[in-house]
Image 1 (cartoon, rainbow, N blue to C red):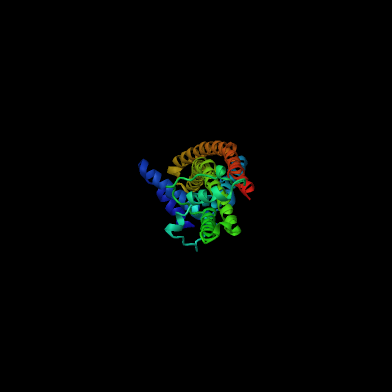
Image 2 (image 1 turned 90 degrees about the horizontal axis):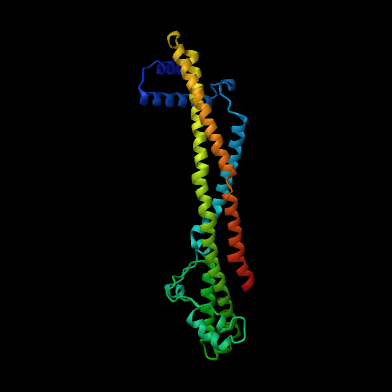
Length: 290
């Protein structure tokens, strides 16, 4: 403990320039943090921050953790293939095997008068890049299975072949809705949610870090005043006063920023967009086609 005091007193007694003075303050606050962590500073020697500030800290921590909890799961939507079976190894032929022309020909002769009559079948661009999702993989598999059955002699009468073709067409709509759903989630929820974390919340966190640094500098200055020589008492007292003013200012800034973050309506709006995307673009399609 005596070694800390000697080092701190020695640093305080140096005639430093502005850059060196900042370095000395940083070193002193680092030493103060280390002493507190090691239990070498009594609780009554640690400046207590306002209760309002501490309450806001707890609320911002909860908000930040809530964002991280949701992002941990929803970040999966950044990759289209999040549910694509890893064990599936589709060939290039299989990946390009859509239900376009082949299904249209089949539908023209087999689906008249059904909910999936030729007039209601979806048209798909022939150059569309294949999607690696589970619904698209199911669509391709069922289409392939249907083609295998109906391409045999008397295959047009295969009930299973027709059923598989119907399933492929229905699941194709679900697969496309899944892609639209994921895009909506990324644009209306994931990216704004991540932006709130990276901007508003992180700005408040940096302001809190500035408060912590200022508080450590103040407590280090108080320790320096206790050990200052008679010739340096006035300078040490001035350093304490300046540190107190700095802490008050930084605390007020942090309180304002934390309140702004907590009053921000955007996260709730973003969550509403997530719910809307799920209800409109995906699950409603699943209900319609199954």
